[in-house]
Length: 203
Image (cartoon, rainbow, N blue to C red; front, side, top):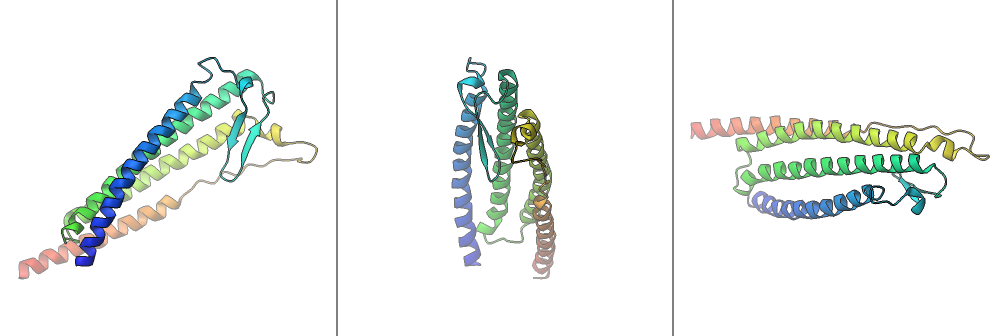
């Protein structure tokens, strides 16, 4: 039990530090995104800078005259706007997730692993993972569509050496596994809490 209490305290401290690091890094990233979004409004045209398109494993830098000015500005602004929205959503869900995990660790720090708060915390975490994961996955798919059709990537990439381009967008469903595991842990700890109550009543 001492190891459990000590480990819970260490994890709680790490999560507290991680929470504030995530908040600071997120604020900096949001400010950067807002500045990028406001470039066009401030008078900087896409012809004044190179457009960049980032994928998971590759980054493309487009020549200044590859797209008409208005189309490039609209595509870049929409992508930046959705990028900011996705970042904010990720920060909110991530911060909420950390707070829920800390609520689970709180009884464990007091050597009460089968407290009712633990099972309830895992259940809330499961629902958050389920709903939040679906939201982030949808935002990711929308972002990919905006990049593909906003920048007209198919025409940009097709040339004398590339005769066809096919985009395959997979919806990430890994969050379903995590949510299922959290639901399972919720049931396990709820059963443990019931056994603990029966044991206390017997004593």
